[in-house]
Length: 250
Image (cartoon, rainbow, N blue to C red; front, side, top):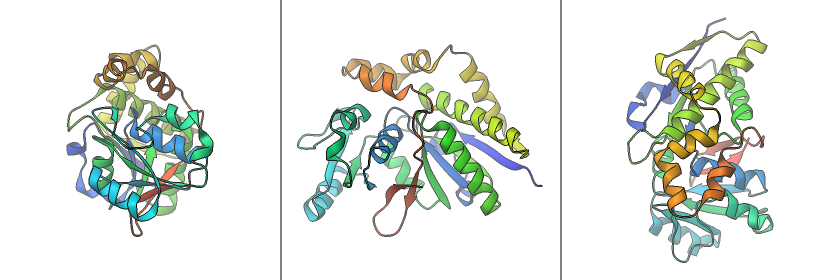
């Protein structure tokens, strides 16, 4: 059996064009991917990804779907929700069976740039093991490799996404070992495993990150702590590229 290649891009610019033929996992753990996972876990039927606020408002006017979004971490004026998994949990009933339109400072821009990937999954600590298993299953079926992409912050490396990627790579290794699947890791994957092991837990890592510090500045410690939880959800969002780009559960 040919080894499944596992590569990680610590920033979107480090993502190689040929990796779009693989199963790709996008990571914006604080907070876009965590929000997407939480929305779908609690019954949202689809999360529509839009880069610009005006595009989100236009789609909302046309469809009446729920508006969710932020700029620089703060909820956009007139939007029902920010980019916050804890806001989803405050009233789970409002998103059940509904479509949600999401626009964020950084994460949705990266997702749009990766939208033509063969398969694009949204990964976070919340669904790390389920996402790793789904990615492995899809890689075997597609006879392809895996690529993890850290959304970063405006093109820059951020610790929280790198930590999350390292943890997911560890999940991939553990699951592959159980299933006797050979892997081939790139040096970045191995380095991020080492990085993730330097911290006692995810909360320590996230508090050291730029994104985590920003959440504390805007009084969203609740989101910071929530996004640190590991493997509490099984939902794996996959991007449907038919028409408007949107995530639905696998």
